[in-house]
Image (cartoon, rainbow, N blue to C red; front, side, top):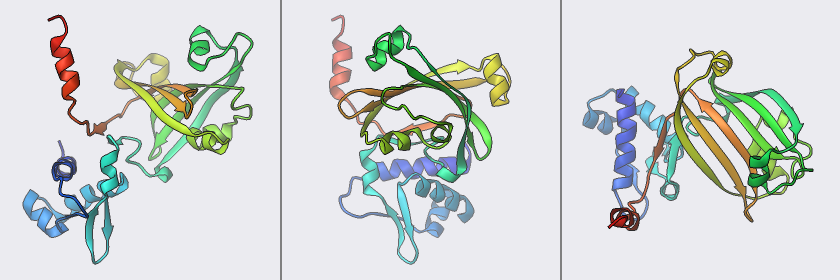
Length: 239
């Protein structure tokens, strides 16, 4: 692990280890550099990442303050959410309307006469292609889906239609990049990747989007509360 990455992870750990109530600050840059035995530039890089993911804020003349609200979100950051919006862009590859198959009917609660949008887009981070996404959305809820919306933000588009997003259900699975995927992503066939299946759910329970993403540069950091009840239940299975 690079020094910058180690410092970032260790500072995150210490932020969550400290349960002192009330406003809290990190030590100044110079002190952190001495404690970790690294340059102030390395400390500054680590702090920039913590700022970009919303865990700390730096106030000139006041110090490095910890954002207490960050504790309420189990997802601290992944390789996309750590980036600013101006570092990310999309390019639509395809968009068409089709009848839902049985799986789509089950997911969206549709019948044979309904339609779904089926689109594919490529996500660039710092102008490098890293994700290939294939998504489906019900046409009845989003009749005016366009290339412009797809190349901006699907979530912002959904919100603009008056819907409220409740939560996301996400599954991760390690895969190898296929031939066609490799051509689009500009990598070697068989390269390791993460397959991310994402289901967006509206307030009220309806699914608004299902996407399958191949990511060739995926990292993710979570804070997960210890679940004693689940551990006990698993230990007692078969007893």
